[in-house]
Length: 545
Image 1 (cartoon, rainbow, N blue to C red):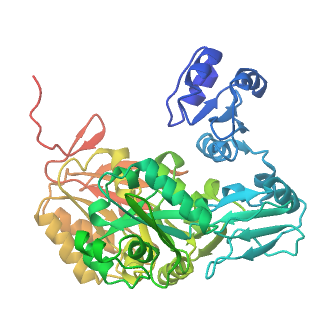
Image 2: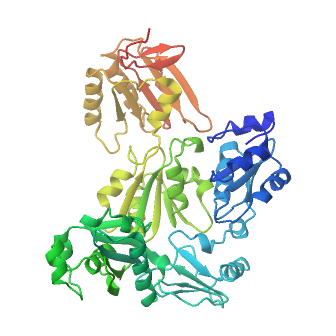
Image 3: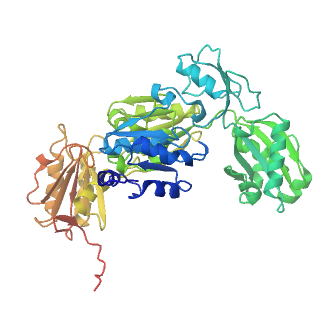
């Protein structure tokens, strides 16, 4: 949102919807509809407009102010809950500004107890946070068997306490209870069950066992009920199992009537145990209503999650929101130092960050898997796309079934380079790495020859370095034998990074000295041409009259 011409120019540099005009009228109109607002306004003006609109930090959008020349991005309100602190960092990175974060825990690098990923906090959050800010770490006590303490919290000596528990505890001054996602609710129901009835039964079951509703992470059921509104209406993830699998689980309260009806002697108890995973145990046996049954199981340990994150070519504007969320939500972030530098605006002092040198990919993958196996949320960062000449294939190859793997895609170097050259990948193309460190040159040579004979546009990754200076010339010679000398060639170095260079030439005039390790080389096919200075490989669409 901008009100001056200079402010509009700044706003147009951001990848958000840009509005210009009357700030007060526009902000009042947008307030109930948006998650965040970036205002090209002085903080005083913004405060006067926003103050009457504030209702609750649980509902209000994030508000960030940027000064007229783009020097500072100020998180005005909604710092933690609404994400204004993260938005201010993102805006600052996009504009080359300085983020201004006044939230005390963020400013000094203390973990925010009410925002620890995977936990729901209750109790004296303000009091214990104050102790952290005063340099007095609380005593951390874990009351969930097998559950590690949050990686963000260092063990202290109190007297303040942080208790990790999935049971209901009385609130006490100086004590915060962190509820982990350790419980799975197994639920069976008939076709006429209603969401209100199932919700009431679940609430009663938890209360009778003194279990915390905030720790229920998943609903588990029989496959025939996976989409039933009474279960999906609870607002929790639903996992389901076939009757035969449920029938193989030993439960304390089997039912012949249930077996006769659905082919297994237990739904709620068996589903809870299967959903909670190996080594889990029932902590609340089944409880029945007229149309439903509920049982609760506790996971033996947290389910580790490893996100292999593609950060894109380098510029924050070309990094996906999913990639940013995966890094922000991780307890441990691992990567090659240069890739970690691409994500500095996403990192916080409460995260553990591990870097390792280039060439140490196997050890980096093993470390990420080891951390995830302990139940941590781990982000392993890569440039470009994690699945293209990056870490995803190695991690998937090494991973065990006990760790959840998520691959977060990113814009590849080849796509970034192509976008700067024009549209050279408009038709069929091949991507080939010229690094013979992991692939014999004879294999690379055969692949380049095949691409040349097939008349494919070719994108060369890892084209040239100080120790590998001849391979690119050899590959170009292969293409010269199959392409006209006027074939367009593009070289892009450091795409969307500082020092970006874009060179357009031809196959005949191509000079390998233009190329470095951070370059992509795009060689056109026989149909690739140059239009208004841009490379294009026509797809063959029929022109409109």
